[in-house]
Image (cartoon, rainbow, N blue to C red):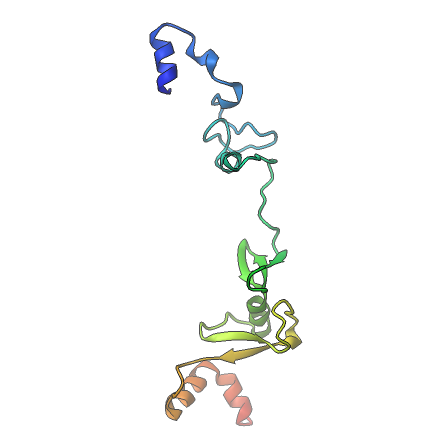
Length: 157
């Protein structure tokens, strides 16, 4: 109970009558069809955060559906939601092409320079293993370690 309601209680008034209906703890969020527990002002945490910005909205979450995407207006890359995580679409497409997660030193390159064009035929894998000036023996060891299938194919076996 806040200090104003405490003072009403001390004076023998019905302090609960002065609480707006939407602020009374009922156990559930005040938004229709929202079954989350109330957190503050009669709203669950999601709707309370929305109320601070002005519009409480509906009971539905605003997170994008899995597979849907958007383009970053500053960078120009397209991002998609996969398994609840936002990922750059060109990285996701390249991982699907490789059949494995990408190494930190690997980057997908857009051949035509258009960052939102993530067709497999427009992407190629670029590698920046070490700073410029790498020793030849170190580079060979790196390639053999990380790309054994490509080495076998290049050697004809």
